[in-house]
Amino acid sequence: MKINEGGIDRILRLLIGAGLLVAAYVSGIWWLWPIGGILIITGAIGWCGIYAIFGWKTGK
Image (cartoon, rainbow, N blue to C red; front, side):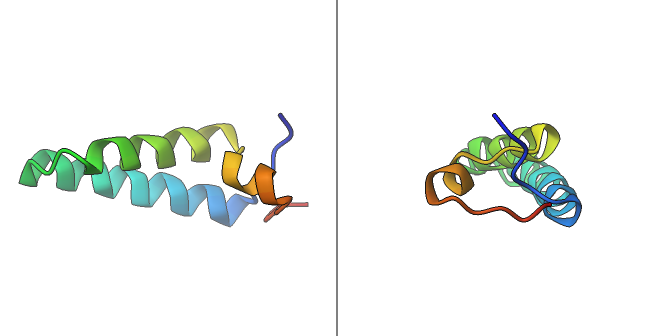
């Protein structure tokens, strides 16, 4: 797996994912947990499967 996310993309994924996890915890909306978790994981490792399928890159 090659990194296909740029720095800003990764930071945004981590921040939005954390926000979704907090919102899921506070509101009890269960389906926000997996979305937030996926965003945090992809932001942490720098690889997105959807980007890979379509050949997209936001990094160098």
